[in-house]
Length: 565
Image (cartoon, rainbow, N blue to C red; front, side, top):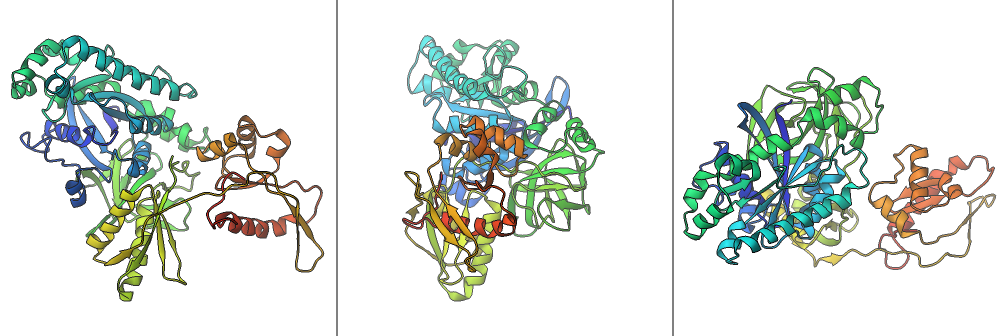
């Protein structure tokens, strides 16, 4: 495990992640050097190649020799478009390092900030690669001084983002800001396959003067030969990203709330391949031949074909049919995958993205918190009634593969609603239903999802039980925005130990007495039980909650969900 690196490449849309991945694959001898940069090998689906964007996170495993030792690098190429941010969040759970790519001309953009936040929330260490430096020389005709100033300002912007996000994180041992001197920043051009970093300049004796000269004289081939991008980036990955043995002791407490003194916690911290199997599923994909493939991180133990494992939240066990590693679009089957790796398995039919799979029953990992909620809804109907059962099955499969999509199936009207992160997100999903499943569907106009919220405290409302012997009194009032934010960021939830939840609510501004009476949290609404000394309330509480949740899902104004009450 000391020689394994699990990394994700993340960036704003069109800053060159997939082109960079091509270079790394070519450097590892997995695709041809000539077509690297144009082949976009990690965009494995047809619609990704057509649209020229990454839609699904794709995994690949490759080897790289660094300081005479062979290292195994498990890489995930993630999408940059904001509609597919869920894939980035899920990928971050499986990796220990994030290579953040920034376009030298555009600089740090909104999605750069989002992917950094997603990485740091999962305790993933960032490094920076500034791409498209050739544009500064050829398009903007910048001199050495201007160019240096521009690159330093990009680094300063990224560091400011990292500092702002990392200041509340107590478990980061050292300073995670990136710097040229440390070798955690690389520069280059993924399209023309050259790259440099401070260590590589010292090794090859090239400096920015040489690079500008070769670039201006169109000697890009020579530039690539003298300082190939893949060596620079893969060396940086091996040197500066933590291996699982360093990373897991820090990451496990952040994503798992089980007993820290248990034997299971020890095997995860030590990345023990002989311990109990603990596997966290971060992605579900469909293969026409193999069926559902669950990809994720092996935190302890060794995955082997034929194992019977528990899947969190479901009864019984699932049997593993095959174990493999992803190589872009191909999946290579292997006999076993030990702890510290990213593996893909078939046979886990009960697993969804975010499931904990283990050989013993255990506390599951924290659920993967997606930063954004669905904002656009579309209705989908089958053109032919005969396709209806197949469509419902496909929609359920879509919801399993992508947790950022919400599907509502109304069996009375036959109308199915899909809610997602944006119009492109829904367009891609409906196009895939048409093309891959062969179901002709009619889609409605996209509608924006709204939220309702009370604006002031209501009067007291009385409700009676059917036998008129019991009376309930309810009031509704708006909740402080700080508390709503805390719930949305996953800092407060009903899954937490009560004491922790109380403290988190008090930190967000709730007073002490109220925080002790929290009965339920539904979306971003909290029910406070202010009754005193009443017997048998527990027996009816379930019905009260059911009625409340129904009212909050269908708000009184426009039947939109209620938030912040």
